[in-house]
Image (tube, rainbow, N blue to C red; front, side, top):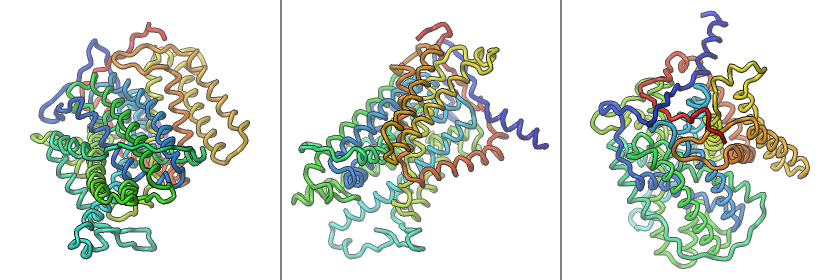
Length: 543
């Protein structure tokens, strides 16, 4: 194939999007032989959202951030939580508008933008999920060993390769076999069926924490608080897990928005309560990083309470890991159906109705990472996919509300109204990154105002030059202001991440484009296997 022909095929493929029709009702074809079963109710969805978040957030992250932010770790969780509330509003609207099939942020991007951008969003989010699962598996194994250490027989006979791990090559690798074993057990549960895993999730979620005491709180420096907010951001990934459960929800158009927002608000309340308790019980400089709650109660002589919390930690981290693996397999299922990944990932077990090959694959990847790498080595590159993916979802909310998209692209203007809107969104994102960098280097407040003013001008252009139709179902309030704030603040937080995270973003993006160029563009089929029925807003609706 000639280079110019290959390049033309690449661009035409990359710019494809899912074409959706617009009848009165939203429906999706269900085929008992290759589809998932709708068995998750509203309560199950809320438990999935809470379970995906609370484990790591309460039992690991609080201690790590509190060592830097002090008692103001509560403010870190509140800031990250408020940002996620805005993002969740965008997710809730799209979940009620897009047909109830697997895909989440990847599917929304495929509908609103194009195939290549959707593939990039998938890759960044998936690596976050893989790394998060591996990190949580290592923490879970540590809590499990700590629990076994309460019994004299096990305390003296636990080998290093089951506990802290054996460091190799100056700590580059850290071999631990317990984490892969635990992952294998959870993978078996998920392969057995979503109903059974949902029951395990419900039991585990109910055994986590009991917040009863609040203590006085004094903030301790805004720079540390904001940096802490970027670290704890990934502790709110539960609502993305709810969105990815769409194909298994009994009443997706009604329950998904409630599950997304409800689980997030529950997590914020629990995080605030736990942070207030542990920073009031123990001076923040003395808080442990790996087991902050258990050590806080132990320091007060409440050893038996500490034992109960360790049990709760095992339950909580198990829940988070279980839901994380569940979400990953559903994302791979969506990519397999669309042809961007081999068809093996699209296979659903005929009797268990679970994507068994995808489930086994994500279990293997997480087992390898958790068995070979230390948590600290992985944690510095977390949250990249979440921050960028949530920003794209916010942009999708605006794009799908713009009227007459096709006619705008055929306008006689030098650039269409649709293209102008995308440029404005890009300017908002760049302004957020610039503001984050300026804040990071502690430059003058005057310099910080420049990107903020530019973002406001771009947002004003979005408001004045576009008509936003009211969508069917749940509607995100304050459009276009709320989505643009989401984009600006998410990318602002992205600028606060470690430099390794930026390198990961660039390298993974290049590898993803390469994978798409040599495989995805030739095998992808946007219409794939679902009869996608989409409720598009009427063209004559106004803001």
